[in-house]
Length: 250
Image 1 (cartoon, rainbow, N blue to C red):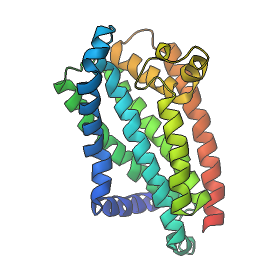
Image 2 (image 1 turned 90 degrees about the vertical axis):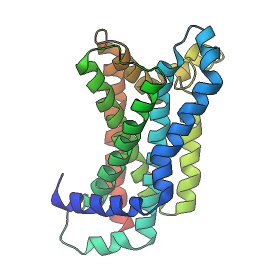
Image 3 (image 1 turned 60 degrees about the vertical axis):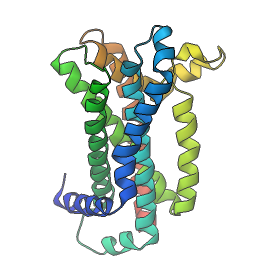
Image 4 (image 1 turned 120 degrees about the vertical axis):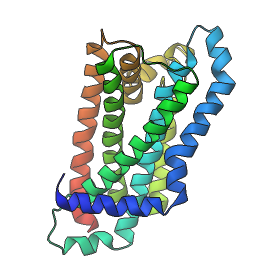
């Protein structure tokens, strides 16, 4: 990461620390959702033969990542409407520094979410079943998903520019992507005509990879390869749109 991006990342982290909503979105809300879902659905899923806390942690991490990404889109739009990007444009910094500065700040916030969720889930009975490398891969895969998703949402924020438009578009992406996935419920729980969509969409594929890393240190090739392919494609798209949008937005 360049010095320009590091300085801008520090700026965003300071701004986040002054916003109680940022801390709630990163730590408090994911913990509340984890406790709520585990309390309400834990016994039901246990009777269905599913260790729900093992199933739930990747889902809550993915949900928290969406909260972070949606925040990054709003911050990007605020930088446009507030004139921050215009001022940065006349400074001797890299053109992509605003994007990467915000991206690293949001990935840091995602890491904070994961750092709070994993110990809480362990207290509820979650255990890493694979080896040390697979457990480390669980964290890295979660952060990779956060980086890619935030990149795409930052591009959206820079493109739409208006906070109200960003909020509406974020919800249109968030709800179908999360609810029509295997994050909170297995694919077989959906109608048969909907299962192919649920099974093959990117959120489900990332959830499959994260769960595989938490479950074992063997047989990881297929879920990791599919998830990596999705993430690489989305990253290329997100960076492409962000690079184009930042020139127009500034």
